[in-house]
Length: 141
Image (tube, helix red, strand yellow):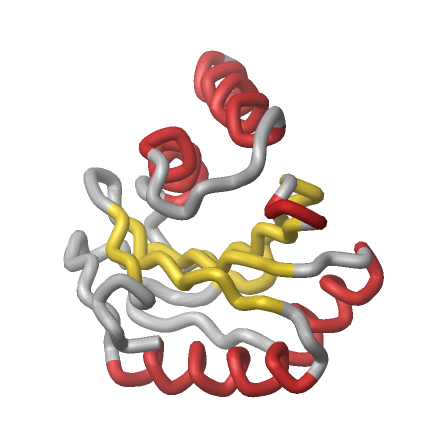
């Protein structure tokens, strides 16, 4: 119950203003949402005009070392919500926040599809219980 209350409070903070992918509030929210999971989980955070929060949803649950994602599902949901942008995030239960080659390749595939439909992929964050790694900031996106 306490974890749900903390999670709701963190979500409320990111819902109130445009979402900044580098904000500590977003990173705390993602660490709370994903950081302590024993399997990989993949989340999409959908954003409207001016990067205003619309929704966040788990779009994939995998094993301890991998998660399959469906580009079609992510993009379809963005279109359904009328999203102008989205942020991707997934966790690494190993505690290593560095992206794998599969992470980079999958992000690139999603980026190409989103770009073709004029939807902005803001970033893809790899999350552990203590950190969030930005694929965009590392120039891998």
